[in-house]
Length: 316
Ligand code: BYC
Image (cartoon, rainbow, N blue to C red; front, side, top):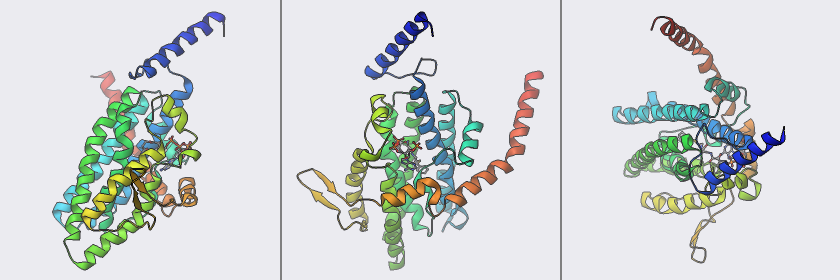
């Protein structure tokens, strides 16, 4: 690199730092450090993959929904997840990676998706608990991302969060209905809560001391809070909701701490978390196999769309 090039890069870097320090948005055509771009691609791709893989556990119940109303609600929700995946892949594309490339990385296990979607959905109460806890955790984690320093990601998150709020409400409403039902229905809600509570806490990522990316992501304004801060916010938000529902959260250490003005809670099983994000969860193999199959069986649609687009270019 020549001295002039080096000076040029120093000025560009100062411009980037200024945008971040002033809490403005970095846009696709702005200069950005390679590591900033790589971190965004990693996080946005992982987020997009989570939305798409996240359609599977709920999709499992569409044909077995207990009423037409519940089926229509669940269908709409699962379709929303597909839409979220598309907004996010589009945001990733502004960083110079295409969806095809990211999908290949997902199905070859070279990129991750959220740990939460590697657990099975065993009863219809799981649909309500996913809405309440999983979407609740997602909202807690994602609202601050609406202020992310990268413009296209922040803007995608605004729309996603609005839809996630509806998802959370539909889950809670389903659980309220079941909790007004028979003893068997109430027991089903409690059992589902017992299974999803700890995995929901794991959605926020490893404890801060074991989170290699948080410090730099916060300095760049990608993340606005640490994993533990958001996990605490989620616990504090969820405890009164559990009380209103009449379910018990399965943590004997959970209690209000007046000194901290927050709830104390037990330690999630981080060994299980590591195993799940390394492919060892109960449904990892099944989720990826299904995604791979769907991608392969959609090849003809992509080919047809590309052929049609090429024809339009010749004869618009
Ligand atoms: N699962 O340094 P850390 C949804 C990985 S979609 C799997 O703290 P970071 C929804 C992490 O990637 C839910 N992997 O990382 C959809 C890193 O590995 P690599 C998805 C996880 O990025 C449908 C390593 O562990 N939401 O809500 O600073 C229906 C070290 O972690 C997990 C998003 O993606 C995990 N839970 O912080 C309903 C939100 N946690 O990449 C709901 C956007 C950590 O170095 N993402 N890892 O190999 C984020 O906010 C952040 O990426 C995280 C992790 C807080 C998740």
